Image (cartoon, rainbow, N blue to C red; front, side, top):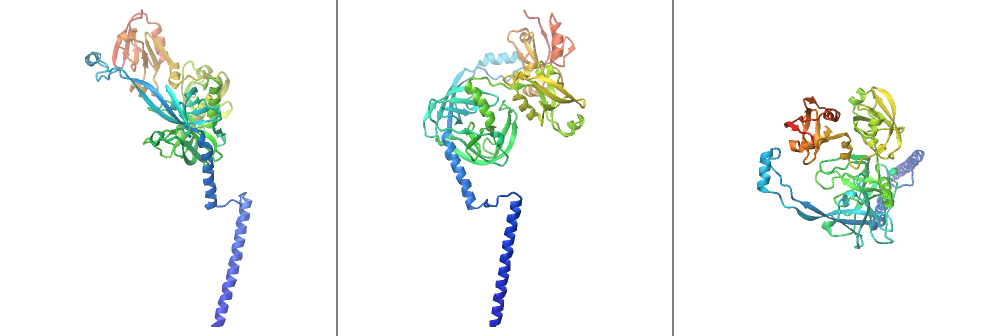
Length: 493
């Protein structure tokens, strides 16, 4: 029995030695392979130590940037009333009877409050925020995290980029540094700082939420609640809620990489998708506004759409890159350069055009007045055009008016998807009335905004060009056909 125990002990000892040697060899091999692959073998795995380091980084960023994040409260006066909704709109007799009987609602003024965030970017008191935070504000108050309040002066604003610059009368303020948003990568840590729901918690101190960069170069189209179109946004899952607008999105070095601007939500609250304006774009706009310069954008004057597989095959394109020209606006730089509907724009100034959003960004960042070279595919053949970039109108509605024409008090425009939705138009062809001058011949005849004119004096009207050609030769009364019937429009004067 004694010999058996000695034998068992020796066996276990030898096995332990072999196991230890094998484990050492395995670890050395893993280290060698990692070194060959360029990995840093000194970096610890996600353990208590590394988590503590990450936690310390978040704490340092919060301590560094939070003192420069401010609360913005706005006041604006609005007037309501004066127009009473009539259930008989469209029927002239009953509509007039209804309004005469009930009268009009008296106009009243009331004050509304707005809340947002901002970031001090200069110790002299310059603050960057969103234009929509201070839009139409009569009074702007800024509260610092230490509780001090200041009345802010609006230095400048730019509607399209949704950037505004304020200034408060204070010196030696804490401020944040704007980083290089072009270096931002998907998967990097992102920290959103701002004052969500500040009106509810009654605290000037900003809150911090953490996430990652989810996507880059995102686009948000206009909606029935928001006319503004956003392009080239940074997407993050760091929680952004109402009141966060105008606050900074920060990296782990404490540099501002974006200005928080919007959330995608079905409930009105945070759902994991937030957006920020890249800091490079914000800095470009900010510098211009501080210098008192006008912020302008390049304009081509086309409506474009993305290519799908079927369209790409139809136009003889091997991939789906480019922007298909759906409409060329009348009198636009595109029309003057010879761009046509059905052209596929493949390159702009030598750079490939990925999609419509990419084209919009490239054109917008080209200075008005400069000549750009555009490569298109027309009838499955390559073609190069030179276009003198124009100055973009103040808003999209103005861009649409490039195809409008006025006659006898009415202004008409070509049918577009936006106008079809706005006026609930079902007609396939014609021109839509977008304005009627009060007391004009057309107004007296009963023409209304939203009418679709398809014939004048029995001549077919398919677009604004037809309308212009037909009306130029009319001297007496004109018989105009709309979806509501016929109207006689007398000469003016």
